[in-house]
Image 1 (cartoon, rainbow, N blue to C red):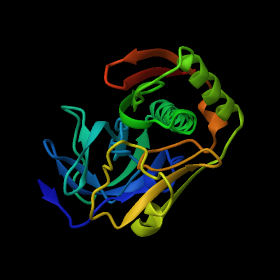
Image 2 (cartoon, one colour):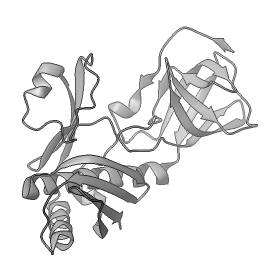
Image 3 (cartoon, rainbow, N blue to C red):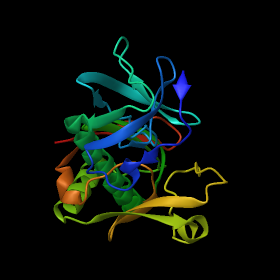
Length: 243
């Protein structure tokens, strides 16, 4: 592997609308992956899968199947695709349909967790998502018989309300001063994290989060609560679909 010193500037953390950008290759290795000086590829985390896309350079296309975090943000090329040499100027491009679907899904899940916390006082114990489908787990000992329908109605009312979704970064102490900023049952933020990225659905939900989101709840669409599963000992799983 050859490399040039440097770290990736994460465009996705500051502007989730970026789909294409120019960058320079800092390192390239078939096993480790490709490191760029600038990237909008979301690396995955918090239940949101990594982005996919391409790098275009010198009339060549290198497909990116995912990412890997390490001491750098590594973009993982599709096996057999060519590697751009270090120093190459490339044009990065995300799979727009996939990213947009994941943004809608992630924002929809924040509305879901906000509604369940507001109306039932339940925190999140786990979850995962794929484009337009997801599951979310809650610590909730008692649920009414119409729980699933009540949650669906409340979530979709918040989507229609077209609430702004704002992202900002705060010093750790200031972030932790916000009530209930951690919505998971266990605080998963590293103890040495100096700054905390906050996603605020204005008037409904504010929580620490590193993922990508749409600009308002109306852009999510509509959420269907497909199924509620009782996993025992207050462990409730909701399966949802974004339409």
